[in-house]
Length: 248
Image (cartoon, rainbow, N blue to C red; front, side, top):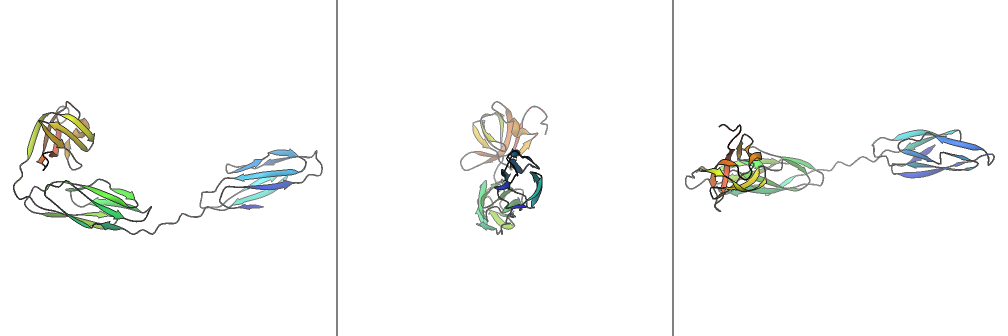
């Protein structure tokens, strides 16, 4: 019998013949066990070439060499160690201005540890809902158009990330833009374009009517609603591409 470790290995079995003219053969090769040479005459040796066993169970095969059956056993691969996972969100809270449209935090954990991120609030949108190992978690934030502050929670790896957003100091008017767009760039849902001389940006929180995001191309006739940011851009809350099945 031959016993081998889980690693790829080669072992040799000697064949003793009573005369140099005596012929012999081998059989029993498998997908993981090769025999060389397959036949010979006189005394010699046979090599058994085993590939690595990546399974967590051992395996065996019976080969015949010069009329003698030899059992070849190969050990199982060592089980993959399950990491001990701990999670920490740094920082665990942030305070944002009423017009802020993005924030982030850092999740610290061990390599290979899986996590998910979910938001309890429609105005806090998680851009990366799952992953493994330490990571920066980015959030899209819908501007707060009310005078009252608000607080929302995002659960990341079982830990709570709290976001407080201040209220506006004055009433913010919704801006409506209507016309042919140009300078379209980005990938849905994060797209920017120009219309009526204004730069418009969309986010994961933007409502796209009738799959309008995929139809945002240069020359499209678009109606956009949103609110002005401090840099003059319009953060879109709703976008509709006219034409097709886009009835309101």
